[in-house]
Amino acid sequence: MKGIKKIVSAACVLALVLGIFTSCGKKDNNTSGKSPAKESKNLIVWSHLTDAEVKALDPIAQEWAKNTGNTVKVQADKGDFQAYLQAANSSKAPDIMFGIAHDNLGTFQKAKLLEEVPDGTINKSDYVQMSLDAVSYDGKMYGIPLSMETYGLFYNTDKVQTPPESTDDLISQGQKLGFQYDINNFYYSYAFIAANGGYVFKTNNGSLDPKDIGLGNDGAVKGYQLIADFIQKYKFMPATIKGDDAKAAFQNKKIAFYISGPWDVQGFKDKGVNFKVVPLPKTNGQPTPSFVGIQAAFVNSKSKNKDAAWDLLKYLIKNSPMPLFKIGNRIPVLNSELDKDEVKSNEIMSAFAEQAKYGTPMPNIPEMAAVWKPVGDNLTLLCAGKSKPADVAKNIVNQVNQGIAQQQK
Image (tube, rainbow, N blue to C red; front, top):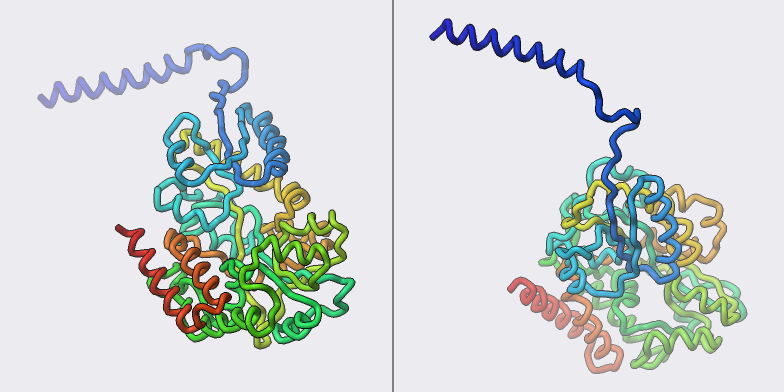
């Protein structure tokens, strides 16, 4: 047996050596001198940005396609999560979702539709930290931030010489010159709740805890009282006011102060309103926090072209900030873009960027879906004088907890 093993071993060595030389002597069938062509990938990008922004994004994507030999189709997506869920496993599924509000990501993540961002895809130090937090869960990134948005205080420069620096000052000037906003909308009224110590979910070690709801604490009650006072004590606006009503009042120069975001800027300019924007007035000497929304992009975990999708996404992120800033008033989240003269010299957008520094990213966990309606309903009762601040606080927490429990069934 030993002799046989030696013979077999020697034969194997000889075969290996002959194989090497034979391989070296073979002619390469690729006589062109070029590397074999890579298979062209066909990528689909869906976007929740405006039609004008999608139109501006398409040439950038096509430039990448031309450089890489791939094809890209960029489409505006008007559907909801359920529509995406149905499409995710089909041949028409997008490889990339580009420009979706970050607070929707929790639902996608729960459904396992988000591909974790590979290490090295971006340099995290290049970004506003808050924007990275907004697309992360348990310390892992599942999306890449594109831009940020928040709201501030618009004021009519024909009526106001010095904008209010404090909430008390806003109340004082507002009583003389008028102040309105979409008060029953939690997105905006959150600022006055948070300024006094309220919060949605507590952050523990970088993760949001849906079991710790801060919409019923003493600070939140103070915020609800202030909101009620805006209606019942100071008579700034009717209890039934809608966002369009407040916008029209400012646009028609009936009021001097209005809380809103970049989405209203162009409309006021077109109507010839003389205005400026400043961060929200301080509360108790401290910046008043606002909700901040992050537009984000992610790669579909079901994509068959993940490597190419990440490469395309990196290209879009690098080349789209300025077009989105110019066309959509999207505030960049890349520090290098924020430092550009074109951004810094824009007084209005700089004000929103300044406010965003003090903001809170809207919670991105699925439990946030159980928050909006209870808070909105109770704010409506509060403003109408049908519920007291302490009762509103108690009811909101109970109803949110009930909603979260329903989600888990």
